[in-house]
Image (cartoon, rainbow, N blue to C red; front, side, top):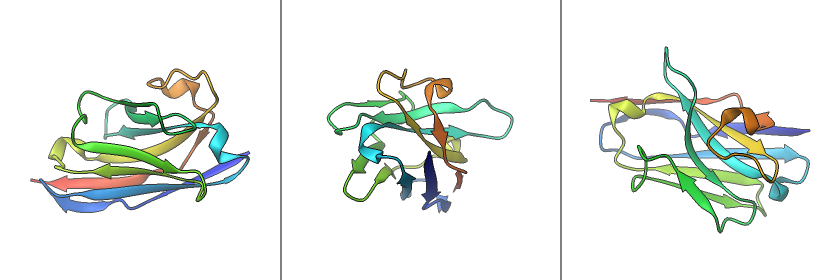
Length: 124
């Protein structure tokens, strides 16, 4: 079992930055692919970014490329999402998720463990 706890969400003006953290406990964190997803009201959960166990393979949704950066620190059992140049369209609840090797990174269904989410609100 893996427990994931997100933090770092909040209210920010357009153009601002936030850094989300996701702390993991339980089974060996470094074994998992880690992903960030988001869900806005009335919309489906969508892929944001993912990183493999070693951190040398990363994928981003087109909507966040060049603005968001995913990283991980296996010694701290934590994955991060640095979000810059935030836009009102980025407003959503952000979730981190852990998936086994071989998971399809952009598909929520492939991830085994999920955090409770953290709210990000970007004002115009």
